[in-house]
Length: 296
Image 1 (tube, rainbow, N blue to C red):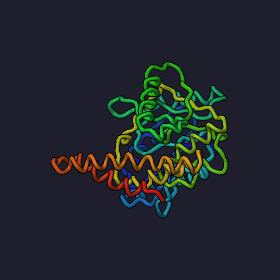
Image 2 (cartoon, one colour; image 1 turned 135 degrees about the vertical axis):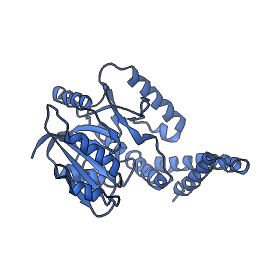
Image 3 (cartoon, rainbow, N blue to C red; image 1 turned 90 degrees about the vertical axis):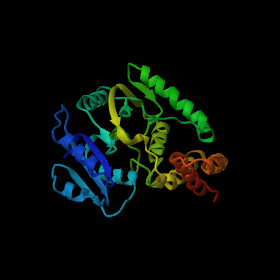
Image 4 (cartoon, one colour; image 1 turned 60 degrees about the vertical axis):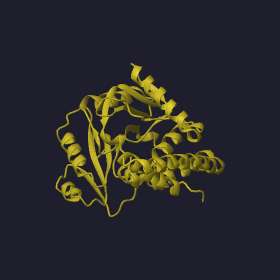
């Protein structure tokens, strides 16, 4: 049945967080209609049994991990909401933020996408805004400065702030603004699918806003696992090739190799004189990154 907002998330062995979201939506009373859809990417932690036991959840079971963006697309196809809300499982939602986001899209016909201010549990603002900046891919320091500047603007803003785009932990999009053929580009398995979407929407002239007065906590935004490294680099160069061309994809790849070699050398030297777990982690991280960012 059509609803005002179709909330869609992807689960892959995150039973704890799915349980928390299910409890939240089960008792949620708001002035708009909604449904909650979970696309499960072949979890093996008891998530299937939990979801099967909760008929109030729209539950789509994938037999394998098909990736984040592809799974969200299956959820979009299976729903009929006026607005689609894409959310990670590891968020702590609150009623007032959801109502404010819904009201904004209802009252602002020019708004295609909107997002709350995402923070860590300690209240610090997360890097959640997409910026169309090729130079930031060549120079990591510039990207960090740019992100810090945007976060300062968000922290001081008292009105909805128009931005180039937002990243994928949590956002609302008007269904009519979804670019064909699917919300997320299915060439991406994991990482940069949200950058590709934001870039596409920006190129299509779809306005995007962050509402600083609506705040939602994203718990795991600080994590950085070595298991994600292959996906991160593969997706990064795929994104660059699609939006900036093969020359820049290769040039950034070479630049990354130089930077990674420098970091790997430093942490390898430090590991000789220190047993620090942090140094060992960094050394292993850059070893894997060196292999994944190799020129092909």
